[in-house]
Length: 559
Image (tube, rainbow, N blue to C red; front, top):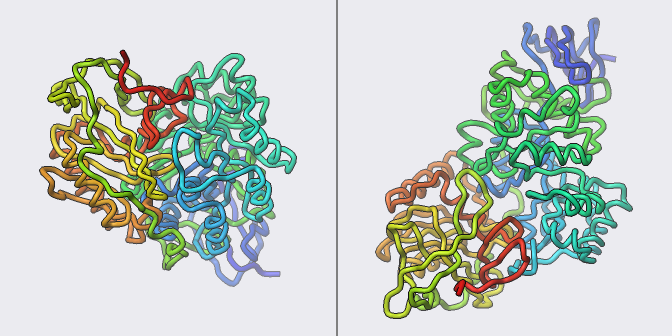
């Protein structure tokens, strides 16, 4: 019987045997029906010797970090060859709850790529912050039965797992009993702590930053997710761990990638290209982005071009500089020449609107009492999302702390925005370079409260007011005047506008931040992680300053 599509005269990348085959590929009803010669189809495309490889599988990513609503995100990443996305969408869940995301998943089939869910395991990430929702083990058990769910999302509360917290372990047990995959999140864990964490069932880690850490986790049986995102660039440091012995247990992932990087550089295709430039064999790099994630997540008919497999495929002219020319999803051409061919349409964004609820604020809410005392300061680590805790004697005037721009020490605040409780945590941060004004964002992992850094109370207050006005997003303020903003009305995290428009707005916002003295790249990406209470060392939430290793709130004053 003739097929629907015949891709003729292809050089087929075989990820099973690490070789290139010459031949034709027959597609019928969205799947590969045959490979070889002598097939017929109603639609024949002569590839004239171009390479044909499996569509990329983005095995650990958070679309919310792109600032793009799912239809716009999908249209962008599919043009770069990503045909399958595996995500926990825990940013949306933290704001609006698991049920809202469940309803959303019923509509994503209309998108030009597949989205599989890992049920968020830590909503909230810890009890040291206020989230918009809470996911219990009973919720996990129900969600694991949804058809598009592959397993349990990253176990971020690694401290709770190690200490035997029933709330953490009950979710892991539910997933194990269901025969599902459990993703890990274990920054810096070694020795007995790592053993205890792994005993709960975590199968992967994307938080490795050094060779010794990555090697140990491979030795202990974890899949190594080598991350190359916008704020976290670990590929060059970890790539030597990919050898003939270890490569089946290694994956390339992006974790968090901005809309600008997606639009201008790509998604997994950019990571694959970089790995090849760093010396990795092209087919090996492709395996780390196709068959390896498919195998780990149990997607038995994904990640390869073989009979019975889903016809998600990329056409490319060059493997050494791999740039998708055409992209097929379920045997249908969905992108060509770097453009998505389908209309992204709309997708239930109204279920995630009107999520910024602030209590009445005054400038005094941002004041920090102090009189020349030593205080704990959050120190930003360049190119990483971890922070250091440093103790500094801070400047003060009239009994209150003031910014010390010469030493790059400014104020920080986190305001609870889900219920309007009035919770405000205040602290100090070093590393932004800000000389005046304030930056604000409702993208603040993982509970996504309103995060603000600034040099004075008046501008921080003005920034909070602007965020409330636009329903969430990013803002830059100086001398009480709005300089730039990027509205993100969907859950305070995402925009329904086109990728090009969102990137243009982001460029303006970041240019405004640089105009105030900001020296770090991607300042809003860095800002978004200052409240993440499960990554070492020091964080700030709406409940106060958090010593992550001690899993406790600590006073701002150190003496």
